[in-house]
Length: 336
Ligand SMILES: [Zn+2]
Image (cartoon, rainbow, N blue to C red; front, side):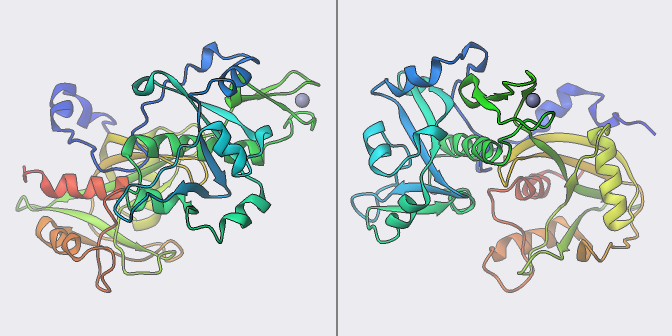
C-alpha cells in the first residue's frame, strides 16, 4: 500500500486546499514567544497597563454585553476589571502579546466560584460556554483561537498540579507554558491529544463520488457527520485514519491526505482533518459508536446542509467544526 499517494504532487495538493474561513478556534494572532519567558514575565505583564485578561470559570468565559443589543460582546478585560470580577491572581498564565494592539500582553485566569455566582444576576456580564462562543461566532475569529489556547492551558494546570514522577506539587514556569518539579527537577509540558477526523470518499465504477457520513450514538439530534477518533501511540496519521474507519464502519482505506487542523479545547484535543480514499464500500457499523452510516452523493449532502442544524431531519454539523469544513470543501469541489 502506498501511504503517501495523495501527497506525491505537493503543488497540486496546495492549490486544491480551500480557505479555512469560518472554522472555529483555528485563528490565533498572538505572539507566544514562550522561549523568552522567565519568572519575571508574569509580574512584568501584570504591571503593563495595556494588559488584557480572558477570564474563565470551568468551561465558560466571562463576557460583557454591548451597550446596545446589536453591539458586539467583549471578552478582554483590563487588570482593574479583572480584579473587580473576582479573578484568582494565582491562576494567571500568559497567552502572548497582540502584535495588532501594540504588543499588549494577553493573559488568562480563573475567577472564583463565589465570583461566578455573583455574575448570575448581572445584566452587564455573563458566563458564556466556550463551545457556544465558537458555534455561534460570538467573538472575532482570531480571539476564538486565543480562547481555545487559554481554555486548554487552564484545564491542564487545574488537572495536573502534581509531579507524575514523585508526587510533589509542581510550580508554574515559563508564564504557564510548563510546570516544573521542585523535588525531582522533572519538567512537565501541557498535553495535547491528537485525534483524526476524516471524510471517507468513494468513487464507483461509473465515476460517481460519494462520501460516508454517520450518525453517532452520542448525538441527541439527527446530525450526520464524519468519523473521528483519537490517535494511538506510535501511529501515523494515515494509519490512525485507516484503523478508525475500519473499526467503526469496516471499510478499507487506501490513500489518506491531511488537509487542516483545528484545536478543540474540550479539554485539549487537536483535530487532524483528512480525506480518506475508500477501497471498499460495504458498510458494517460498530453499534457502540454509530447508530447509522451511509454513502451520500454531493447532491444528497447539499440537501442535508441546506436544512440547518435545528432541523428535525438528517443534517450536517454547524459551519464552525472542521468536520463541516471537510464536508463542504468536498461538496464544493468538482467531481474528478
Ligand atoms: Zn517530581
